[in-house]
Length: 369
View 1 (cartoon, rainbow, N blue to C red):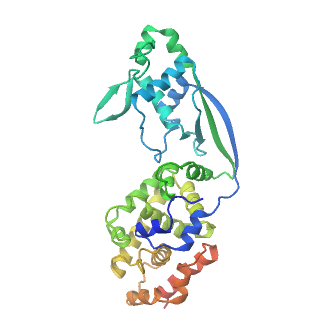
View 2 (tube, rainbow, N blue to C red):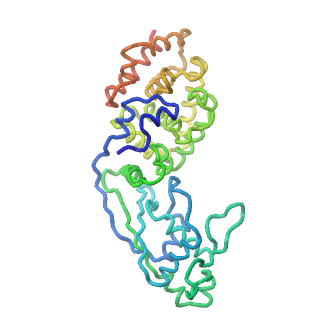
View 3 (cartoon, rainbow, N blue to C red):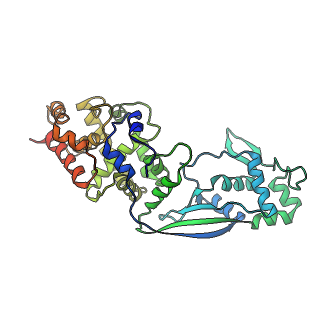
């Protein structure tokens, strides 16, 4: 399963197309033990859960796009006792909140009607949610939720007690919650497909994700990456995550890289302030040292930024910040001309031995006595 970014897309994003990167993206996930069960929530119950943030909308989901007549007909369907398609929710193992996988438009339409206003607030202005686009003979035409409650108690109670069939997905084994990444990846089939870090940005929201966004704005990093504006597909953010994961959890690395990164982000999404400070200072100090000694865009050795070279050089610098040799620029020039190193960073595999060997080779050639 491709996560939506092929080799030509890598080139368009300013990154060098490496076969191992595409092979990694296409890798199948591990076997999971997952249970899916129905939960017939009433509309009143669903709205209450949403208001308490017990049900959340992942950031990757498209914005609310339904029109007022579309949402009105959904509400009328409940009032008429007509069937409505189910929604799918994923259980977050860290706090048991539910994330909407499918059914955002339906759920938000219900919430908006109960709130009395259609759509999200924009610049302080909201449209009163009165049912529109219904048959002129409909007893609910132009009715708001407040009017139903005040003038038609039977209809209001029917709406409150109406059931929206819900399927809840919960990962049982392993207990790392990583299947949510693959569920989003595979269900995201319409429009522009999301790439790995865009999914992680939503699935593993929290202090670590906030830190990644902060670090991505670092001025030294921007010149190393080679583009001032942030990458719209968050490939620059993913490179920072790769650096942190390889620096602080290399011993846990197992291919594919995308799952290694997801596990690291999931495990540290709510890292303590002390750990976040360590990540912050390590990255900032490393980015500053690399820029000071190697200049702008040092990882663009061919057509674009080479992710494997970026991994190798950043981690090597991070371990040797206090003893950078005077001839480091020449050492780096020699490194990126070395046939063995070039083969390793252009390898077709992300096996642990290959990743570790190129990290070690970079450190030895750049910082050996």
